[in-house]
Length: 144
Image (cartoon, rainbow, N blue to C red):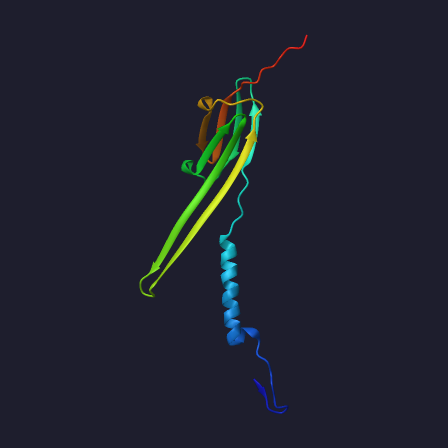
């Protein structure tokens, strides 16, 4: 807009200027990108012990069996979840292909009070709850 009386131009707001279009598209890019970035989720673990077994329960909602890996080393158990997605969108009319990839990893290491024989460990996943059962090898010694 021009002010003819004072022979001055009034500045336009930034969103009405050509540079405003560039800034808003850059802003939109970063906002969309931040929506896609997610922090690794923590694995909530509950441990308890009975006379016969040591039980570890891990909450893994929405996780499939093929995304879980369990590693055993001496008296440590590591639970890891890997989520990898690739999606592709094609628009033949506009002539473009859009691809996105998502990779997420979470892990938790649990220290046990005894060594573990991996052949005796049983793990099941049902309704988002991973249950690991280990025969209890803890020996209690009577003090005289």
